[in-house]
Length: 294
Image 1 (cartoon, one colour):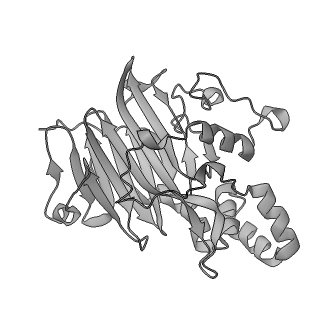
Image 2 (spheres, rainbow, N blue to C red):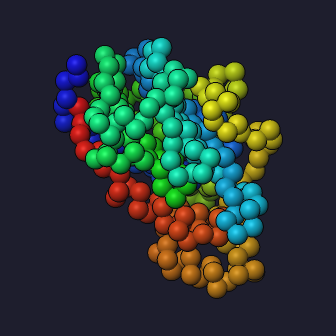
């Protein structure tokens, strides 16, 4: 049985379109296409948790055409020999859960939590589109909103220091070293005044791309990434703004006003030409609140 303690206060957000808030609080956008190492969480030299994510290209609602931005449609967390995976359904309104490649009966959570000696699964007050997974030293919230999968990670401070890697960054209260590459070197910013650019974030994320042989995702369950995923180049916010200044300045002004200068919101709105999608990163953090903790 689990011994429940107060909910871990330290968080990393992955909002499905896909925007990141590192464990140190650095916010950035990475629109890679494929399978990525979201997080590696160590206890000293021992890998305790490995978290992967898979992205797909957004689709324009009006034209049906694929856009030059992406969204998360699958996450997987592995601890020791157990892997729990979450896959967005084909209609993008719900998600399924697999435990070691076997589909879990999610509706059973309406009757109560599922618990074994390793972890606990729980629905958010009967809402099957928000699921909590709780281990002794990690809490994960998976949520579907506006056709996207979001993930919230919560960790105890025993992992603070030099124990995290991947897209969630290095957790040590120093945002300047969050963009550590797999080879142990720090990505150098290329922007003015030593700031990182959207292009820098893309280079960083691509370094954490997973080889297909190391992916946790079963192609028969999750929609496979596009065959040309490794050559995919997303559009960046500066490109979108320039394009809409020429093609549709009225929509650009509406988006700027509606997003209130929120860069994540503006990017999503322009990339998908969809104000509803653009508002997702502004509201997701307010809405996803686990009802119980450790």
